[in-house]
Image (cartoon, rainbow, N blue to C red; front, side):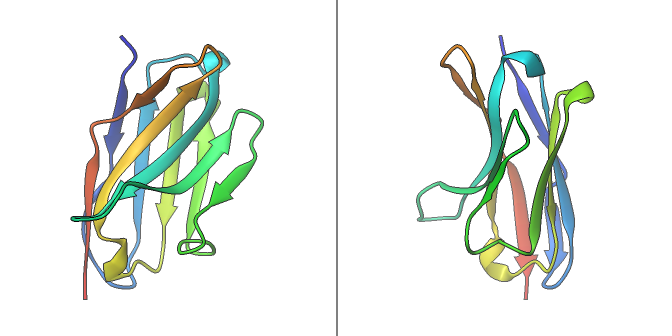
Length: 116
């Protein structure tokens, strides 16, 4: 059973920073890409950022320049450094892993709340 374990969410004031981590039980050798998505109350889940096995990154326009996605292949872990946080960033953040054999896995989600 593949597992994704997220951590690092919490409550922060606007302008502050948080770092999310996602540890994957699936080997990096079977990973096509890993990413972070978020879902705010009453809204659809949306892509925040993702990173391919080759290291290519992609960001939502709303977070570009403020968030940075990175990965540590030795630890099967992906990170999301979030700076200059805004109240609009408040959401449940989910880690997603897509594999070379066509499966997609999701983490349980971690709450990020940004107060104004």
